Image 1: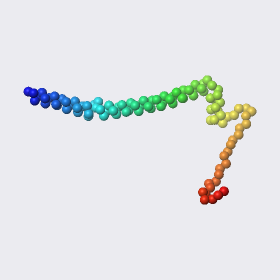
Image 2: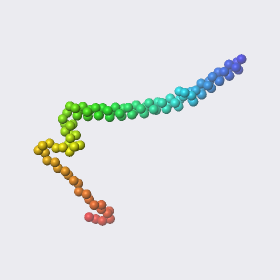
Image 3: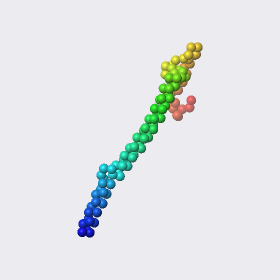
Image 4: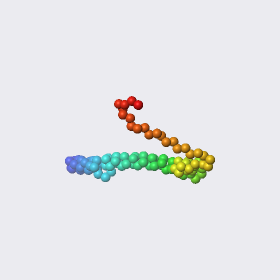
Length: 102
């Protein structure tokens, strides 16, 4: 009788260990899910920062003339009346051989 109880307990212990290491909710699966959750939290934090920056930019465009003026100057090349537009063109230097001296 004692051997039968011990055998049943050992079998139960083995079944629980198998479930712990290889079944649903095993250690490996829990660790993989925790890593996925951490990665998603990092992605969410990055996207929240981007969304906050975009919301601030939208607010600036709705309320402030400075942001609109900056966009008009940089993206559309507009200038105010009475201003003079100067374009600075950098001279292109021909490729020099390292062995020659100028």
